[in-house]
Every structure is written in structure tokens, then in C-alpha cells.
Image 1 (tube, rainbow, N blue to C red):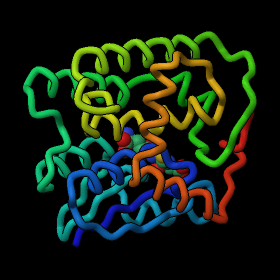
Image 2 (image 1 turned 45 degrees about the vertical axis):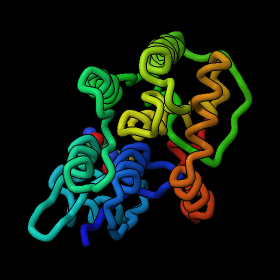
Image 3 (image 1 turned 90 degrees about the vertical axis):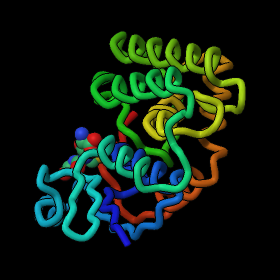
Image 4 (image 1 turned 90 degrees about the horizontal axis):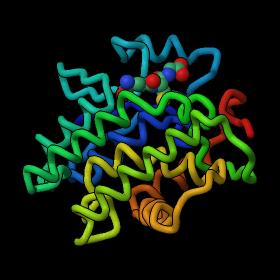
Length: 215
Ligand SMILES: N[C@@H](CCC(=O)N[C@@H](CS)C(=O)NCC(=O)O)C(=O)O
């Protein structure tokens, strides 16, 4: 059975993505949590991860150490497809996923994932709001073009939703203003059973991270 090594669930946004994808693809796996921002975090990370980061998937001799690479591995190993079936939709799903993987640095920096926290609205750095505007535009475009069959970006839950689930939590945690349509998409993520499980596990974790417990 493969093992997914992850950071603690309340805070590790990169870990959430492949964890959701493995579940959605129907791949059985064990999980090992390395709490982040602890005195011994680096020592534990260096033992399992060539890049010194989580998530890492370990399957026998194979180590896969990047969230999007693990999502692709899940797509190849699992019984249930996690990319849209239509080639055009699939290409767009990969584009929006890669855009998330490589971008939105101001949002990630100023609004770190902290699922169990709720902050009241406040004025945000314009670069954060520019990221949110772009995210809402691409969510709306995916929903309008491909989302007819369900509440997610491509209708059914897909790898693209795994990539954007942490963004959904940042918008909720920091009360960032979004359209009704975006709010409905965020609700759909929060209603997804696997996401709910992750959030419940994260809420029960004992560790805190002052770098992410911010307003
Ligand atoms: N590009 C990597 C990024 C992974 C990453 O930045 N992981 C963070 C946790 S969310 C980490 O391991 N940080 C090390 C630390 O906090 O000590 C991926 O997609 O997997």
C-alpha cells in the first residue's frame, strides 16, 4: 500500500491536493503526518523527501515528491478518472491546475491556509484581490463552459477541484469578498465528504503554527 506523507491537515495546503485526488481516484493509501513548524520538522522531512517538503508519496522503491505529480500518479493508478473525459475540458482542467500550481503567490503569502480559523473581513493588499479576481474569472469560465453536470469546476469533482480546494478555504478563512457563484462553488467544496473528513481531522489536531495563525 502506498503511503502519502503530508503536513498537518489544518495548515498544509499542498498536502490537501493529492490527498483529495488519491481519495477521488479510489487509490488505497496509508498516511503519515509530519507536523510543520516544529523543532524536529526538518529532520523528519529530510528523511522522506528529496526536496525537504511535503507532500511525498512513497510506493515501494518509488518516491514522488510534488503535489501535482502525485495527482497525475493517482490519475494513472486509480480506477476512477479524476481528469475530465472530454479532451478539450481536460486540457483546460490541466491549464487551470498548472496556473494554481505555479501562481497566486500574493494570496498564498498573505492568506496562508488555516481551515479551522475564521477572520472577519478587512481591507486586503491589492495583489491579493487581483489573485482572487483572476481565480473567480477562471472558476466562472470553467463552470459556464464545462460545469453543467454538477457543482464543481468541470461538473463532477475532478483534479482541478483538488488543486483549488485550498484556495476555497483561504477565501472562507479570511472572509474575502466573492460573487454568489464563487461562494456556491466554495460551499460545494466544503460539502464534499473527503474534504469534510480532512477539515475535521485538521480541526482536531493539537499543533498550532504562529506563521499561519494571522489575521
Ligand atoms: N511544489 C511543492 C510545494 C510543497 C510545499 O511547499 N510544502 C510545504 C508544506 S505545505 C512544506 O513542506 N514546507 C516545509 C516546512 O514548512 O518546513 C508541491 O507541490 O508539492
